[in-house]
Length: 382
Image 1 (spheres, rainbow, N blue to C red):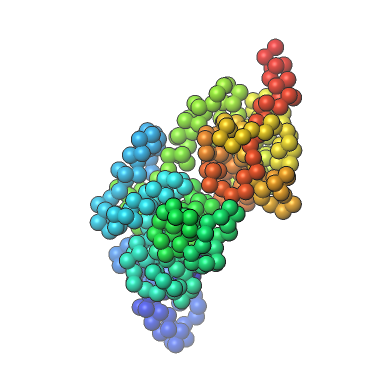
Image 2 (cartoon, rainbow, N blue to C red):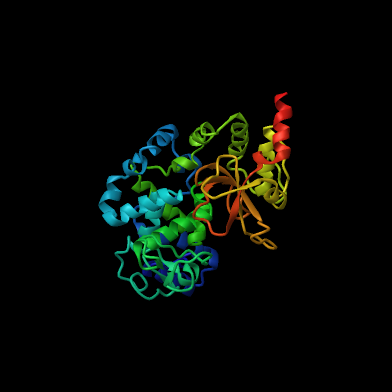
């Protein structure tokens, strides 16, 4: 989160007048809903966007553009070009693509927080504001990592990030701050569940509405689309890269579960936990592997990082009672650097995400190389 919900001086005056007149909290709340957005953005009409408004059509075209990297470059409105400084626009697009979140949502947060770093209010270039937030993306220092500038090390807490390659996460540096904001959105539901991801960034529904409205204005299409690797229409790319029919069946099942919720112990069909979706995906190919993460880790043949293939598993040291020898979370590789995972109840729906920038990776395994699985494959062929 950045800072708590904020009010403009005009909205503050209205609340004081209503309170002094003896109005109850319901009247004040209604006034805030109407006045706070209006004083901030004038003629913007805020509404709760439906999925069809947020995620427009053109998915197949979006996938085709992904191969050339033209998608984000083409989807920049004249409003965005005139309002966003060139260096900030480049960073929004770069880290939006790198992390897998919508660049225009990142940009909308940058606009809403500090007008893309142009604000002269306390906390933007030094120090903190009244709520303890700092930098162009207005991170709480505690959320950032505890210090405004800190050396990036494995296992570092918070969202401190090194976007400019100097080895430090500086909350006042635009590259570092925008990369950190992209990671925060990703962790909390983006690109699929944007309302949740933005709400965690600043816990106010009117803030979410404003960010989504700005993001739509920044897009040439007027819509907030999905990044190519999060768009279901692009799943065929993962499946087509499968080395054989067995892996293809495994990936087809796993990818078909995207958007479903996490549930501890779940093996479908409506919800899954991290190992449950993998267990069922292998069953879809006629193969039996252990049900739990603790069983799947020693079952597969260990492989070196960089040698992983679609269908392999990637394990993380995460959760109570876990360690480097006893990982608590698992995802399935769908392409180099990408995995499908059911992460946790509060982490949003099952999705394709990146794993190379995630801390606490324990290692990779190949269940298909286990002797019992190879025997199952031989019997299936006879």
